[in-house]
Structures are given as C-alpha cells and as structure tokens.
Image 1 (cartoon, rainbow over the protein chains, first blue to last red):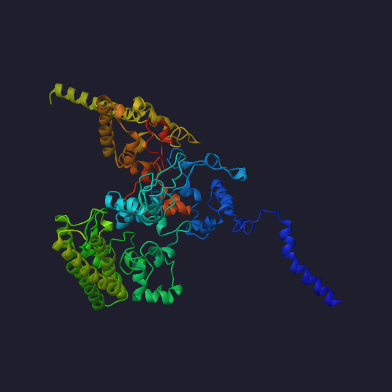
Image 2: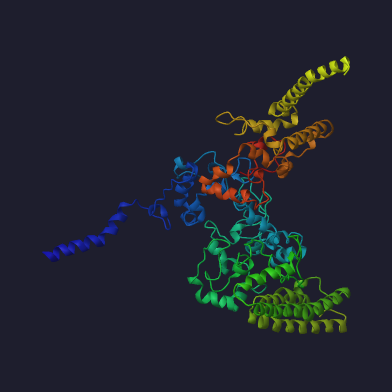
Length: 452
Length: 182
C-alpha cells in the first residue's frame, strides 16, 4: 500500500514537466525568452510609453532588457526613451510602424507618434554626464576616427592592398577591422536607420549624424553601461591588443597584471567614482592609473591627461598641445606629475622615480638608436628614387613600418608599463634585427643603385 | 530769489514727476510691446520661429495657457541694466539685418548649432527658479542637472534642450539640413 502511494508520487513528479509543456501551445517556446519566465512590473518613475518599451522588448530582445534591469540606469529610472526618444524631425527619428513589420506584436503596446533613434550619440549621454563627455572630447580618444580621414596612405592600404579594389568587397577590411575600434562617420539610410557600411560598430571615435564624436559604449557596453566593467582591463583590451599595441599583453606581463590575474576576482569593482582606492584592489588596472580618482587625483575621462610621451608615434616626443587632433596632445611634465601621484598610493618616491628613469631611457634609446638612423636611411633612399612605389611590396618600407608601428611601440610601451618580455624579446630584440635588415637593404641599394 | 526763478522752479518741480512718469510708462510699454511673438513675428523671417513657438509648450500649446514671451528666453535676465542694453543691441542688430542682409541666404538650421549664443540661462532660470530643488525628487532629473548646478560643466540649458520653445522647428524652416535632437 505504502509502496503504491510512493510510486504514484514519484510518477506524478516525473511527469509534471511533461504536463506543463503539453499545456503550452506548440511553437511558442523560444530560447532566451524571458517573458515566460519573469514578468517585469516597474511602476516607479517610468512613463506609460517607457513601460511599453520594456514590456514588448523583454520578449523580443530579453538580453537588452535584462542588461538594463541590472544597470544603474534601471535603478534611477532612466528609461529606454530617455536615451532613444528623439524629435520627429531628427535625421535618426523612426516610427516603429513605418520601418518595421509590427504584425504579430501587441498593438496596445505600440505607441504611435513616439519617435525613436537606433543610434544614441555621446551628446545624448552628455545630457546627464556632461563632465565625462567634455573630458572625452579633450582626449586622444576623440581623434580615433577623425585622424584617419585625411590619411590617404591608410585608405590605400585598406581598400586597395587589403580590399583588392574589388568594388563590392573592398570595404570589408574597414567594416570588420578599422572601424570596429576607430569608429567611422555613421551614415543613414533613407528611413533614418544606420547603413550596413557604417554600423554596427563598437568604435571609439564615431562621428554621429548630429555631429557629436565618441562612443561611450566602446568601454561601457550597452545596455548595462557598467562602471565595474570599464574599470577592468578587458574594456581596454578589446582594442589595445595585438602586434602593434599589445597593451593587454603588456599589462598581463607586468606585476600589476600578475596581481590582477591572481586575485582580481575578489576585488571591489563598483565603488563610487573618486573613491575607488587601494584596498578595494591590490593592484591597478588600466583605468586606475589612466583615469581613476586615486589619492588626490581627480577622476578623468581624458586618457591623455597623465601621459608624458606619445608612446605610439613614429618618434616619441614629450606631449605639448591642447589640440585633441594633435599627436602631441597633453602636457608631458604635468602628465608625468599626475601619473606619479597615481603611483604614490602604493609606491615610494624612489621606486616611482627610478621606474620612470628606466622607462624613459628605453624610449630615448628607441628614438635615438633605432628610429633616427632608420629614418635617415629611408629619406636617403627616397631622395635617390630607391624606394618602390608600392610600400607594401618593398622589403625596406615594410621593415621600416614594423620598426616603428610594431616593434618600436612594443619596446616603448612595454618599458613604460613594466612588461619585460615586450620591452625586450618583442621589442628591442626585434628592433636590432629590423635595423640590421634595413642597413643591409640600404647598402645593397646604394651599391647597385637599384631596387632588388 | 526772483519771482521768475521761483516760477520756473515750481514748474520744474511740478513737471518733473510727470515727465519721469511718462517716460517710464513709455519705456515700459515699449519693452512690453516689443517682447512677444506678435511684434517679433512682424518680420517675415521670424515666421518659422513663431509657428514652432505656437506649437510648443512654452508658446501656444501649454495646457494652462502659460506663454513665455520671446524676450523671456532670448534676452539675458541678469539685471535691469544688462537686460535693457541687450535688448537695445539685439533690436538694433535685427532691424539693421532686416534692412541690409540677404534674408534668403540666412542658414537658420546652421545657426541652431550656436543656440547657446542667443538663448540665455539667466532667462530660463528667471521662470524655472526652483529647478534645482524641483529635480531632487526625480532621480534621473536630479542626476542630469547636478553637474550644471555644481558648476562642473560648461553646457548651457539649450545644449541639452535644443528644441525648447520651438516644437518641430525644422518643419517650418526653409532648408531642413540638420534635424533636431530631443
């Protein structure tokens, strides 16, 4: 008797999920659909139109709504429409029912007359975060795309050499490469939505149809816009990596990265801006030194503010310009002072001073020992007509490019950010090989007065 | 004192308040009469601005019928002296422009990019006196206006409220090259 009851109980328990599934109409279950799992009712601080966005989109794009629910915007009642609503005559304004097939959606949730924009430019973010956007506008990040516009040699590299000048395909390297970090000038289709050629992209320097420049979501990815995320090195790593500026690799090679990798998962990441100090963490990330309000320093979104050298240029010089379009943007001596203030929260003066003396020596060695002699040979060959017209099929010019753009940056940035393997093996070791190769080609061309 | 002098003095003493009062009334009337959309709209170039103003909550579409006059946004409201001086300056400029400029060549859309130069925060705050306190109750509005009231930003009211006062201005302007933001 008892065994029979037990059997019935177990059988019912096992069958229950099947019964529930059978009651659901066929074909309505959807992977990732939060709507059946979790109803979201937010009555606080949202307009009826804003509630409608959430009600519908939590079924259509549950990922977006779940990001927003976890965000600080969700906490303070900044709704979808606070960022996406635009005036009727905005170039990016669309009406759902005009550009999308709304059949099959709940018509009660469709707010006719609510104009929204797919794109959210930094000028929109600036309505609540004006200081951050003003600082960004004064930073080197501002020119990430602007600087590319006049560079014909770069367009030739991407469209002709990489894109093979194929009419329909030549923009592929830009679409999948360049613009995904540097951004682009976003163009609109006739319906006011961004074109396939220019969007989506996660680029830092987008120029939006309203003229504003930047992309806050390059570091604070949508739709969570998390401060904790942007403080982690991975926010920077999605662009600062690879052979030409391996900054995430340099960070991991450094003692700072060592500490982060060992125990970063137990640190405090969402402390208020300006109050994120040692103790919340045991070692700094990119954001700590370059942006955070550590010690007496003020938080900044101007990533150029604490720099001395321009460590990415062909030849590194001390920063000395207020123009965000200048390669020398910043105030070198003031920048170094600020960076040393960041160091001072954890390091003694002698430690910091000696570290920068070591690094500066490496930058100067690159300038004087490698770039200057290489440039001298390049100029001489150029003057004597001993360079190929196609720089990407000329061993001398390719090696010269690698010398400053790849190896030279690795040596300098490795030295400036405490990464021995990048300063040495990926840096100076490769540099001396480059220089010997350049000298060899240079001598042969001068002797034969011809290009091999 | 000669009787003639006394007579003159009496006339001056009696007439002075009348003259002062008359000129005060004249000035005030002039200031009021030249403040609104009827006067400003008497020039054809202002037709789009008046039409969009009438469609806006600051103009004709306020549910309680409140209307801000043109000058309540477009003349700085720091103090009476700067107010009168600015009004005179803008008035003379506009009259001169109306008579001598090629009016069709003016790119009004382009001028909107410089709106901070002709819409004044002191004027906005003349009516929105308690904005700082009013926004405290709404977290989003509080966060948005805090850097402004702390003086941390250079942005002006119209930097973030580009269409304020003129709903759908692009609809009415001759060449809608650039559009509106929210």
